[in-house]
Image 1 (tube, helix red, strand yellow):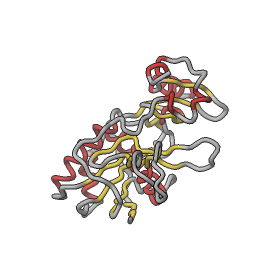
Image 2 (cartoon, helix red, strand yellow):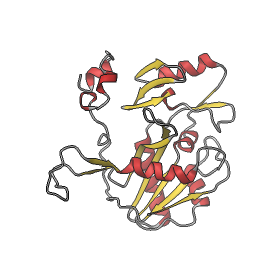
Image 3 (cartoon, helix red, strand yellow):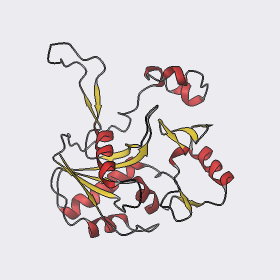
Image 4 (tube, one colour):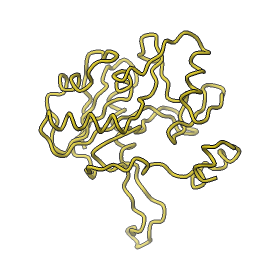
Length: 241
């Protein structure tokens, strides 16, 4: 698998994203995956607010979240079925503004994929929209897919057998999250100015229909359930408690 980051100029708010991509990406091979950072998706949608003060940020964090709890460093939030910091609202590389997450990353990925398939004349193409994440008790950020199109997001081993004939009961691989982290490693998190990456040779399954909720699991089945068990929120009850 080869991951190539694309150096670009600074993307401007409300700019045409497809035109921006085609200007910087000369070729998208058949059966490749294009990774587009969530920040420029959000900027293309105009999903920004003025960063006037701390109270303004807190207001939007609560507004964008299904659940929000203030911790020592950040607001720990649940948004779109994912545990994230500050509802994904970002101030880095934002030119004095707050950048919210895209309105609907799955819809954005599907729309962009349709345009790019036509432009590059390819029949099999994946588009992944990642965002940075941290995981419990580990230093350093990785990346997680907010939305994607053209590929299956998960590889399911359940019902199959391991090399000694033992049947798998729980094992699945988060394909799009793995691709997101691989891309984030080469795209960078600072001033690299590489919001795009092309992945070729990835062991993915291309598809025309994506199951939007295939990566989500009920809270009742989550291994972190002991830490969520005290949450008595409508979201928690709705997802299996």
